[in-house]
Image (cartoon, helix red, strand yellow):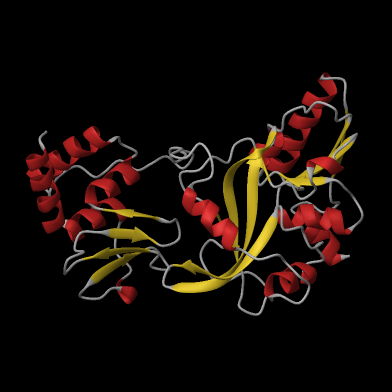
Length: 318
């Protein structure tokens, strides 16, 4: 396909942008639509411009993603560029009756575009501030009985865009569990403006799209503090609750998958898993404990007494 052919394809897709977006994303959120743009999702996080110089361009404000209609086809159908172009040509042949777009399976992960933290992610991290007791992020964490983390691991920004709004946000630096110098991703938690809780958005916790999460941790304790023993947990608040209770060193593994796959690290003789008391949390804890035991290391699991709780839930209910 020549450059001229691609320009023609993009122009034709732009002329049918609204129809194509509905085909890929479902019905728009009419309460947030206007003559100039369509909005999709319960909070209207995905916008599509219909008129003007930017007609046919879309933006997912919750995921730092956007582009033209070919880019939307690639993202929604998990196709490479040539396959997306072929699909677009077929759809344009009969946009009214073309077969529905195949949806991504729920467990289909987006492709990894950045092997390490992207320049945009590094810029955001560099702009963030240390957390103190009197800042919004500090009030949020102290209100949840969490320790205040060091700026090497967690920082905050007074305003981070989410859809059409901005809220304060926590930023956790995710690094490779086996290489502290390899930054992989940012864990973002949007907060209420007064720090009383999380922001009123669909998904207040998000990672950067297109970045690696597997094998990553938030090093709440520096490597110099990790000598004979280490504690790990899923969530950031759970990990910081363990630190506040006097446990340490502790790393946050982000989710159950990373807990279950946490590697046996040289020089560490004992691992403590602060497990979430649910099926995924218990399975992950059993998996990593078995791996460490098989390697001749000590491994123990600490589980909140009430099913459904994590350590932070248990601490706040006590």
